[in-house]
Length: 183
Image 1 (tube, rainbow, N blue to C red):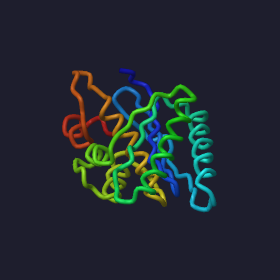
Image 2: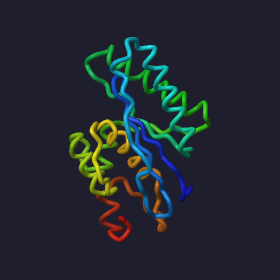
Image 3: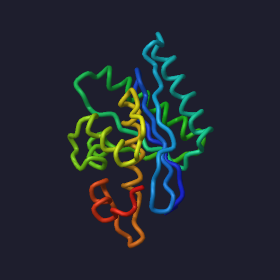
């Protein structure tokens, strides 16, 4: 496993897409950037998808992530919303694939569980945990940004064996066994 990598996490959306980038170096991770792409004012779904492709491509070109982690669409009652969200996810994935960035997908429940220890945690709980653990000085205006960051951190936990071969599935298990490694 590569111990020096950049991970891009994406929380896909057709009104707001959140993203976060972390740098995994040695046994530590640190925040590189996070933000949102606001799409609500675009009049057409096709234009939103084009903008998602362009922005994800630009983020990849700027930060050169080694891997992309993305939240899988959840199955809701509104089929039209689910289809639009799936298209947004697919376009973000296509942008990564077009630039040879490997993709990893995680369910919303898995992401929340990795960050907070609870699969039914609220967005606020996820944001608070990330703010404290990554020492984020100014929490973002939109929690979609911390949602994107959460996907990247979840991927880090899922794909990170420790030096003794142990696999951590959440912040809680990592911190309990490595209190000295949090900056």
